[in-house]
Amino acid sequence: MISMHLQTSSRKTFNNQAALLVAPFFLSAAVFAAAPDAPAFVAQIPNPNDYNLFANAGWDGNWYVGYDNGWVKKLPPLPSGHYAHAYIGAKLGRMKTLPPVGRPPEFKPIPGEIWISLSSTATWKTSQRWKLTTTEDIPLDASSEYALENVGESEWFWTEIPMEALNFSGDNFMALWSTTPDLVSVSSAPVLAAAWGGKDLDSWVMKSIKGEPPANPAVSVASGVSYFQPAMALKLIREGNPHPMHVRVLDWQNGKPDHLKPVITGSVEGESVERVWLEFKSNVRTGDVVQPQWTQVGRSLWKPPYAFSLDQGRLPQGKILLRLSAVNMWEENAYSDPFEIEVSPIHAQK
Image 1 (tube, rainbow, N blue to C red):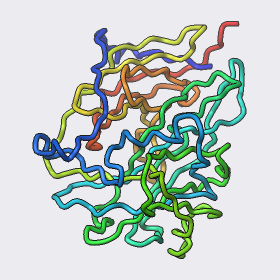
Image 2: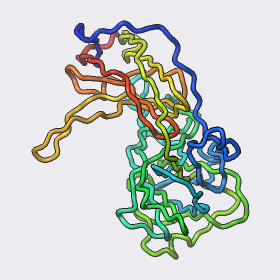
Image 3: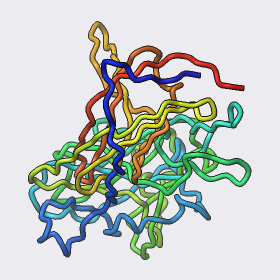
């Protein structure tokens, strides 16, 4: 096991303030006059909070996102306006785990990647594909046999795409799938959320694929879905002023013999905070070039309190820098001041 200790040269006095409670939301078209820069959520079901089926609990509908099972969504016409950024995303949950390890048992998600794409037709070139997320951050599926951590409500994941990828004068088709061969059934893969829909046919499931969407558009839209709307959407960020956030570390508690993970508590002040996570600084080599890079460690938190139990096993030994990071609904990022810790091996008390 390993423990963390703050370096004397970088010790800080943390205030015992409670983290600001800020809930994520999207504004509806009815209040755009009051907040003209609110993101435009583009989907047949206009409320992102209505996608509560399949990916939280109960019947899953076999709506998994896998290597052999993907999804296609035709978006409604794009709203006119002046936009600075575009993001495509999906709401995912019920990720499955590897067999338990250790005592008490630890459950890690099956490693994998989820990819997403956008095109004016139901076929997608390599340049029109982007990694949406890894399985590491998707909430886990509950178990009737084991006590699992990191089980929770499905969440929206977003990735930025170029503005020139959008077709403002015609069709836009999204695709969602996995490039990981291990994700081949609802018992191994995450589940895509859904909302109640109608009889209109604007969504399809791609069956028997092999890690990428079909090259033939007719194959992509061969199996239609009705009555349910997949949680796949476009988010357009309007031109406007930034929305400042203030991220601080409030408290650090060293690990204890009965709870080896140190606890870091933070505060995020700002409008419509959507997600907060902890990251560490590392050096990444590309050929002969070494560049610093901040890498997420552990899972994100979508709601306060922003208190993280740090898994020391995910960090390199020695002195490293940590910081808290946050993103709001405009996909703007903010960071706390970095602070130095030292990771050193210890032995758990028996």
